[in-house]
Length: 231
Image (tube, rainbow, N blue to C red; front, side, top):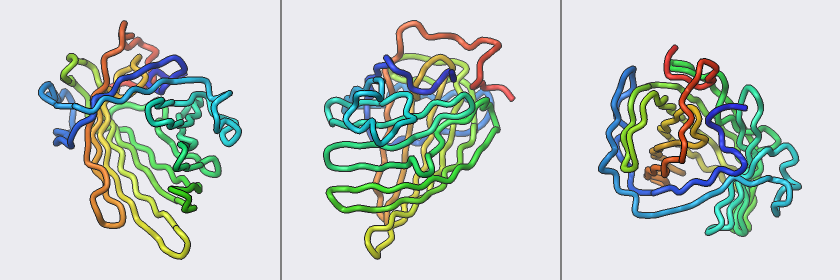
């Protein structure tokens, strides 16, 4: 089992705020977000996908990330060599990527490693059906020390994700583009800090950041770690 993917029993509280400059890539960097303001609080929990309302659509899901306050379920497949997003559902929207699932992690993964993945699926938004096809590229572009409002983390790896996708709604097509910088540490099963900037159909759609509360009892990296900072 990989050391950073979301797991059953993991509970996370996120503090969401505005976009902030992600800092520089490179080795032995220090990213100081100690003054970051995240006024919006959102909690989510890793639960067994079996028994959730949309489990039948995701038979290979290993874990479901559940946001109770929004009634949102995100389904994740955790394989030995990679972690995939299978889809997400709520009462008003859905996206199912089981036809060609979207890679989130590949293992092992270390500084300067990259991978590219294509994905596709279908869904609906407010009752309007659509199809989606996209490409995501990930690069481990930096490592070092990360400082957030809840503490200092050493030996963290930053992953830069660049994603493009096209939605087809009836006869219309819409293009999306997204850049995300996320910081990870072996033994913590979610991003410690993340920043996203995105556009949809040429207009700004997401411009935000968030930091997550520190877990209790951080597991330090070992010689057997599969996400590491050093090449």
